[in-house]
Structures are given as structure tokens and as C-alpha cells.
Length: 173
Image (cartoon, rainbow, N blue to C red; front, side):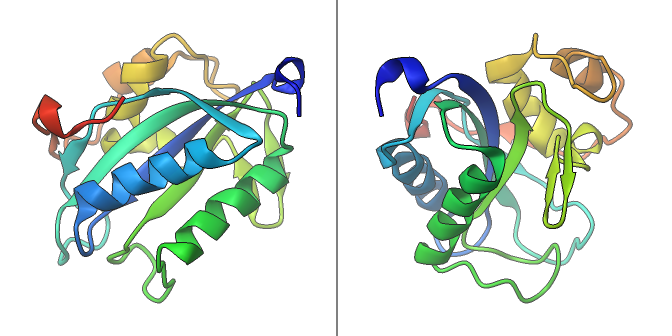
């Protein structure tokens, strides 16, 4: 694929709370960047985040990445799921502990509602652990359904769960 064909900007949410969550998130970002059809443009800092929903589990490490790709949204989702699978992700308890979680948050300015693929991510606007790292790399990006910037969504957010920046020495940009 030549550089000029990489024309869609997307945003990926990254999370882990099993094993070594920091290492898992960094490895997932590295694997994402190693894909021929994906260029990681920017990575957020890593954050230690309180579980939302199922509270009785370890805290998470979360981050976000801005990417450029020529892959269609469904193919990009397939790449994310392959990375999860190869890193040992087992889907057993919804919202439960996981080795790695890669979510397609935004894909260009598109709104996609298909079986097993909803973009923008249907819960992202309600989750501080998504919006804080995403705001770091894409504060100006407009949510294609709500017409509000990521920063605006964060400023209006009712969720007050803990999202704590990790030591800058732990991040890989």
C-alpha cells in the first residue's frame, strides 16, 4: 500500500486489567503500529482507571491512539480482534477482566451501525476512561452523532470515576 492511500483517520481505545496491564497496552499499541495497513500517528499517555460497570475487579490501564489507515472499518475491527486474540483475550464475562481490549472509537467522521460494528463506539461519550486519553490526542475532533468535540463531551460528562495519569516514564509515544 502506498502512503497516499492511507487516508482515513481513526481512534482506538486501549485497555487492560489482567497480567501486566501497562505492558499489555504498550504491546497492543506496538502490534497495531506493526500492521502494514495502519500507521499510529499519536498515542495518549497511560492512565490508571477505576472499573465502570462490574466494579469487583482490578483497576485498568487505558490509553487511546490516533491512526491513519486505508482499511475499511470492518477490516480494521478484524485487525483489532486478531491482536486481542493473539494476546490471549478471552471473552467470558461482559465488562469483566481482560488481557487486552481494543475498541474502534471513531472512524473518520462516519456513523456505522452494522452487526457487531457500531461506530462511533456507542458508550464512549459516557466513559471518562475513554474520553480523558482520547481528549489528549483528539480534543478537537467532533463526535459525528452529537456534533460536540471530544473536549466538549468530557466537560459535560456525568461519570466521575477515577482516571489517574501514570508516570510519564511508562508511556511510549
